[in-house]
Length: 187
Image 1 (tube, rainbow, N blue to C red):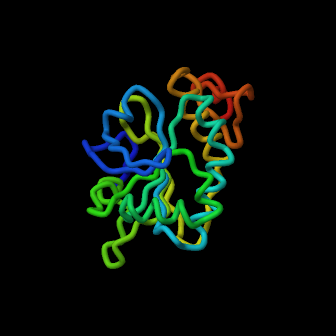
Image 2 (image 1 turned 120 degrees about the vertical axis):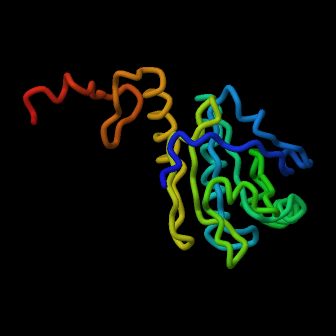
Image 3 (image 1 turned 90 degrees about the horizontal axis):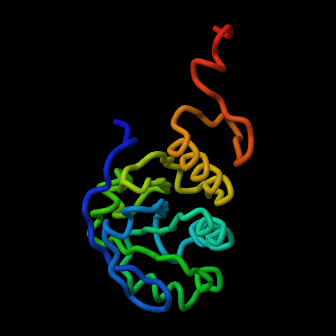
């Protein structure tokens, strides 16, 4: 079953951000773009490379009005310990959401029940709190923050310009397609 246009369920979780603990709720998502970036667990191998890549591109996400939320089934205390002991993770300035009850992983349908961890799921959430794009990858394959940024920009463009769509490899400023107009005579 597709999760496209699914509204994120109400939630309240602890996060580690700015060297402190903070509560994050669904209300924090409303009115802006968000990315939920699920990863299996803290203190692992692929995860820090992905989270550091997100940090390296975080300013670009903020410039387009998009907040990043990394999410694992670890507690906020484990997030702090990882932040305190990992050179890569100590750089993070975006919120690290704790999901020890698996409420978020279940809502986004990425929980691996037998292991109590999340799949590598990436979700773009629009200002109405609805999932507009998502991808779930194998646990052994890292993701690319620049491609994720491009996808967020494409989702934003389509929301703003509903009569146009973005072709493969589209980037801001590139040609778009207008369904019905660009397809005339090509069928």
